[in-house]
Figure 1 (cartoon, rainbow, N blue to C red):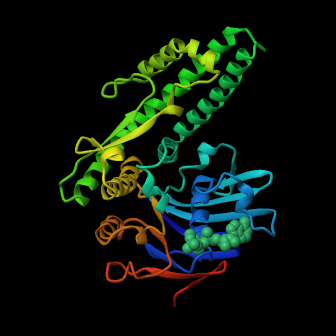
Figure 2 (figure 1 turned 45 degrees about the vertical axis):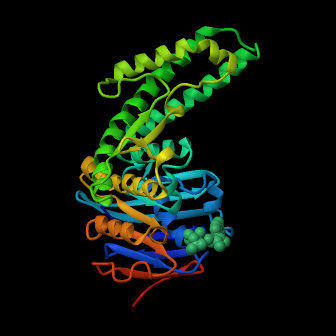
Figure 3 (figure 1 turned 180 degrees about the horizontal axis):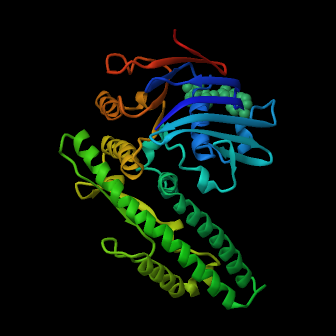
Length: 373
Ligand code: ATP
Ligand code: MG
């Protein structure tokens, strides 16, 4: 898949901008605070409808404007698709083929992107929340039903926690409603868990291949899904997982009522990365942790290809300077030629003599972009 063209209006520090991308590798070169990340972010928002940097939509709109608009034309094996998103204080409006989409799940997935920023190198070291977000974002793109189930799960979870608080404050005493919410939570939570377990198995396969290669066949990477409920992770069916989640919730009711909170379920889960059988978060060197993060991130390219038959578009925000020479080469080798890439950098030093394809170079300066002649 490719992004052939993008138009950006009143987005961040861009007044208006139209760019087309005939080349596979696109490099955005500029000093700090010129708009490089803003441009990658606009591509990310066009794909995901949300920013990776903020949940406050107001920040995305140019200070002097009320609404921002991003549109683009993507090219897939099945043809070209125009996409559009308008962000204003009234919310977001999305269009596919010029037709407004009411459901998030019918919009997301049209343009698949993988964003890699320096903070992704902390995927291994960072908080569990970061890893859950990683799963949700990546899985949501290849599986729109997952997004739907996740939204349902989060909404029931919120209601349930509110109700548990009301019970604790003795504003309510009816446990039948709690039972209903518990059943609903197990239904959607089970679906979320099931999809995640399947996804992690596939991710592990591709990530391990890359990890082995980067470590010169010295290291094996295994990814374990850490669940807050007991699960058979080798043999599982949706029904069994739902049953188990329901049972675990019922078993912990006393504690839930006491704490007025739901502390079991996918919103409490995590990922564990093991290198040669050892937890790399606890025991790994910084280099091993980086290799793991890089392998996992790059594995998504192969995974998306195997799931959708299309390569995603890759957004690399300032990562080259964060990687050592060898990892830079591995990164470029994985993408060059086949994956359309948008890369930002403050200097071409890290790229000189490493590229085997001719890039388009764009100069970014104070919210304006010029292509190198
Ligand atoms: P670096 O190399 O430091 O990462 P960058 O080129 O990636 O820099 P960006 O984050 O893309 O920089 O752009 C930052 C600039 O965008 C800031 O200087 C900020 O003033 C401006 N900016 C951010 N949000 C808005 C907005 N809503 N309206 C106008 N300008 C904005
Ligand atoms: Mg930046």
